[in-house]
Image (cartoon, rainbow, N blue to C red):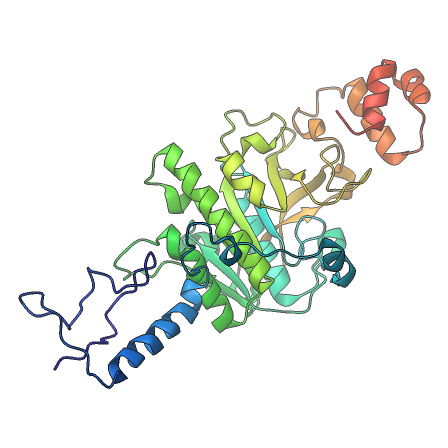
Length: 385
């Protein structure tokens, strides 16, 4: 008798039965079922193998079917007072300054040619070796980092870095050249989870999400991207991993302010991320960039997670690696990067910059010093412009 529990069988997640399309060796040419021995030994084997499959990390999101009205299998009811009283907050250390911290799902977006991949490799290498320079250093010890690369060729990386500049902890992940099929977005999170567990990594960068949905219509792409972000967010909470997702922008103009709506598929993608940051071009020089937070968990005057104040960078070759070097003198309002040096800054921009350096200044002083209205001065002090 053929083995009724052949490994090629697949499990039907909808009702817990063996998939009709699997290579079930229990069926003859006439589709008749082979009898199960009366001693129940083979039935026990079926249950054992099914249990192993359901515990597989690849199916970590799979839950038992919820019967109609069976709310207890889906929802957990707890005393909120006890939740708050027993909660132990674990501080999050920085991976890249204020822009990315441990156990966070973050989106990085920019226009084509701004340097998303260059920055991603820089961040991955910095976290892999631990430390870094300035306000955007990693506070964690050296650790394995998975850089999942759907975008760049080997030549691209060769042009940007010497092999000596890359830390051994940085693992480059790409689709196998002999792979029979393209990555399935639906099953990716399970694969990422298993990969991170086997390689001992708590940090993963996906560059970039647009590749996975390039063959879908815009509507389907947004829906599937949102579904992937939702799964990534659940994985983040389950395994305490940090995930950075690189995405494209739908901006049609280079030198205009970045907003959350400029993220391709914004409403479906950004709502599951704890932070959304952009990498913007500068109208002043081709080697200048700025980073801006469009969504963050913490607020504060003059911090880099404020939309009013952005951090400036210059692209340079440091230690054999092309990277963005923070230039504190370039920090300021986003508008300063959106015009050429020959353009005089507006009264409002000057007032914002002054307020950043002097957060206790009164609205009246802003009005008199820069010739702006009372309402505008109040808006600047409240961080609304």
